[in-house]
Amino acid sequence: MGDAGTTAWDAGSPLALAQSRKVAAAIETAQRWPEGYVELVPVTTTGDVIQDRPLADVGGKALWTKELDKGLLDGSLDFCVHSMKDVESVRPAGIHIAAIRPRGDVRDRIIGAESIAALKQGAVVGTSSPRRAAQLLRLRPDLQIVPIRGNVETRLAKVERGEVDATLLASAGLKRLGLDAGAAIPTEIILPAPAQAAIGMECRANDTHTQSVLTTVNNDITYACVMAERAFTRALGASCASPVAAFAVLEDGDLRMRAQIFSSDGKDMVEDRAAFDCGDDATPEALARQMLDAAPPSIRRLFSAS
Ligand SMILES: NCc1[nH]cc(CCC(=O)O)c1CC(=O)O
Image (cartoon, rainbow, N blue to C red; front, side):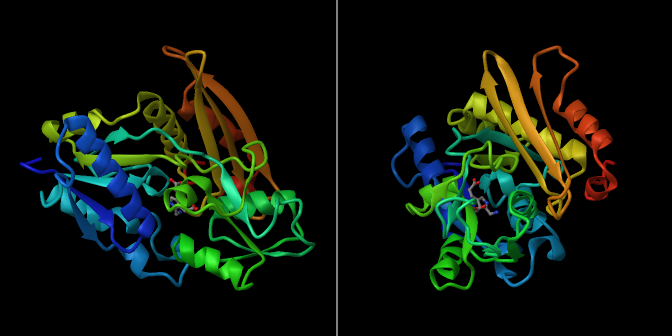
């Protein structure tokens, strides 16, 4: 960072702007910098330009980070702010996840009904998330899942206009946009995506100055949990087309993780949990291996590590 830090957000997304503003404010407070000291730079990403096709068909999560990665590596940006859920589990060489903010509400919310059980028979639910589709179909095979893209407001409007009966959205994103929509679904019913509700900051791996600034707004516990969820996802060889859920918490000094992998139609699921302790054989990678070994072909073919 020079005199002022330069950070970037995905300019096509109001959620990304809200998150970047919050991160900039947290850094300014921690560093006792004046308001506005951290300069925000809008960067439009391919992911937001292509709104009509499912993410899995056009190139996956990298579409959200490609332009931002380039800005980091060419030195025009000092750091980037991401929803960690949208950041691929393998990052380009030279880019480092420097900090993760305290996690918000990890649950999904249902918009358009009081609960999944309350949806009418055969209801049309809009989601382009393979995880949410599989989880919904597992609980309610009668539902009709249709793809839905666009930002959070667009999706809410589609429910409002009756284009779909319901949709699922992350509670954390709704809250950050100041939207109090829908009903929270317990994690026992819908386990969240790996890294859901976590905002992270990336910088160049060799930029020790920016790293030391970002560390002041890091949350150690969230960082450890999200990194374990990412390690699990990476070990599965999961892509954005793989239905996977994972959620880790720190409890009595242990990292405890619950994880699920599904077939696309939700008919098959492998669920497991593990506690990771320092110096233990139990690791997120071992959990991924064990779950893939137990998985039928309908699940295994969706993961490239199998
Ligand atoms: N896939 C888009 C996306 N990326 C992050 C969030 C919400 C905020 C978060 O989980 O950090 C959302 C919207 C959603 O899934 O409802």
